[in-house]
Length: 326
Image (cartoon, rainbow, N blue to C red; front, side, top):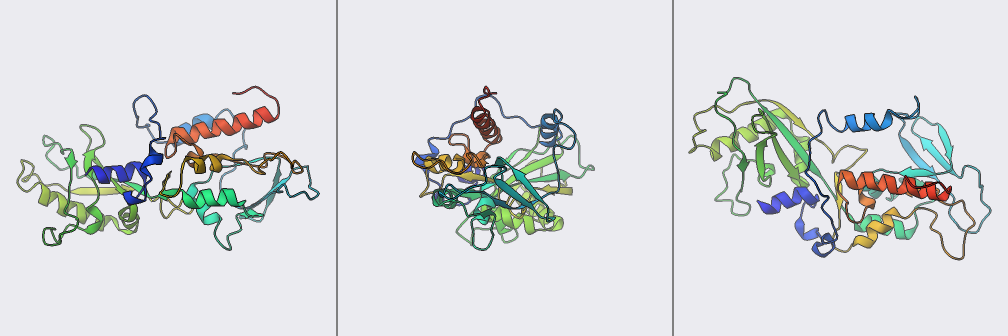
């Protein structure tokens, strides 16, 4: 049960791929975790409310970022970055802050993708390749309203037989056997939450609502057959699930330090381009900056880590232009 919980915390579908020594650098942020009413969109809307109208352009997917590496050749110092959009339009910029997920970057350094032109330097692509990036999905199940209201759904902590097929219940599907819990989202709620990671999370994305409801109904009826809940008909009428693994703008959920990588790779992820040296300053600086949870050494995989990385890159530009830090 603890193993499966750790899989959702880290996004490592197989904990043997997780570098436990590097995990020691991770830092918990003080304070309680909270659930945001109406979702993260309310935070984005609040932050965006101070910007001029039209500043944020939605639905314009970037297909390529052209930049000028510090290779000693003559460089155009005016608007050195050229951004291509899926609608064929082009924008020129002094600086671009790339905040796409590590999953998108992994795809972007693959053959024939051309996300960056010229391709990212070796130190960057190696860090992207070594770091882990997994899939974690949340599943919400709404109980049918005709249930006995006096009978509240329990907090289930679940352990399933994994290896011995003789001990497995034949009707409980394989994708359910590595989820650790099924609990109301708060004490009296009729909405239940369960977490999935790894290949089970990807399988969940491919299932229909009917298949999910059938699987959970079978599992619950078997787990609770000898409990005080056995005579209370437990039925579901609605399913809501995240689908981070197949979303082309994410291709996964969050990063982890995999075996073979280290915190140094997280620092490399945060290094702006072109990388400056003591010998070469021919290209305009800070053409491509990187932010996002996978660029924070101690708070990777978290929302606050992503937020802090954005402040870091904003301060980098402020310092470049000799403004004070925010």
